[in-house]
Image (cartoon, rainbow, N blue to C red):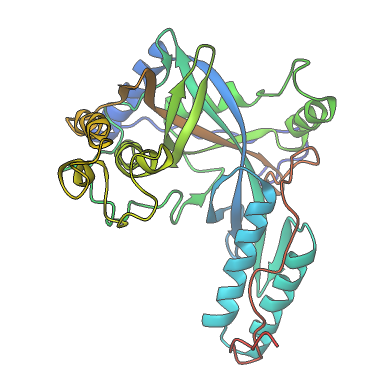
Length: 360
């Protein structure tokens, strides 16, 4: 049997390759150590994005919009915008533009999870977000996870995008630890009475309709520790440094404004450092802002993955995502997945030449 022709309930063979290149071998050894430190799994819930498959791609798909949305309708809205801008800026002729705009019209009024447009198949895909956990809590970034040689804390510098250019190939060879993780997670299924019955039924059904698992690249999230759980604060991000940078922004810019320590009408470039030492130095709130700046300094001291601030513990955790896979490709939204919004019109109309039409 061809590995790309697997019937419902069947599983693909996993091709395993042993890493021999030094850097990849170090990453593999690091993954083995990580299982010993944090071998349990904590599941957070589903994430959604958009994948596409061309006519000659075989079983392979590519990620068009990052699999990071918490609601399937948000992913559909993202596809709506993606196709609208293709119609406006990239359509080769009026026929292609017409096909793209017809797809946009459907997305404005229907919950569409799959479309074929101009020879490309688009699908809203569903991934499960999870993290490793052990005696010390959720897994922190690993020593071999990518980090910049020189950390850049400038907010104007854009960080890499999650899933940018990511190809999804269920038959691609994987390392031994990746193969073990895929095998271990094939049976991942919601259980227990805290999940509604329709959620559990959909999860059981997915084990049959999409029996295989494909792992997406890790992401990094800032979480806040409470007495009994961890709550995401920012993220996900493509690197641990990008997650630290988001926490730094919260400490120096966002939280001081939310807490009323920097006025809402202050210059957008003002943060805890500049307010405490500049125009706001005489303000009674300046002393309070010093604590925010000192917390930022502690975060910037190195590859810091844990920070105590005002009685709260913040941690950079390594989050992972699995995409279930069936004979027809990656899994889409389940009937029990929650949509927090309705389809809406998002962009103005275009004429047949791609020009924006006046609203009246």
